[in-house]
Amino acid sequence: MSNCTFRPAVPGDEALILDFIRTLADYEHMSDQVVATPEVLREWLFEKRTAEVIFAEAEGRAVGYALFFYNFSTFLGRAGIYLEDLLVLPEERGKGYGKRLLKELARITVERGCGRLEWACLDWNRPSIDFYTKRMRAVPMDEWTVYRLTGETLEAAAKPE
Image (cartoon, helix red, strand yellow):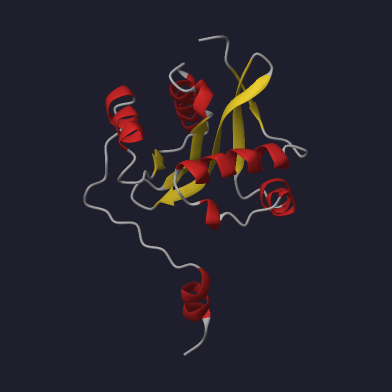
């Protein structure tokens, strides 16, 4: 692996972030669900500061990215970090960049005093599951199921009865 450095995303990186989002969505067979725009990313990432992005760079270009934000554990009584997206460009996989990105997020998690680093993975994504469990020793949370309200169901839930 060539030298790998990390840098936080800054205003002006919105198009690059969106490229990574689209690449991930394509891999996950969810391209039709991407409605984010550079303007929306600018608002939520850099103006409202609701999430953060770090890039893994090698030889002067971004080869991977991670988008994350704080969550909170009532049991631990402290924040954690939730990893929403982790992607290494397809042509750069197998070079250790994914492991380096996760280790950097673990470092950030510890440095900030957070109690845990969590993420979700699609059930069919065996290469990622193997990476997380075998290479990173992450533990799947078998007894938990993620639930979601979005779109029309979210709008309906928000209406008074």
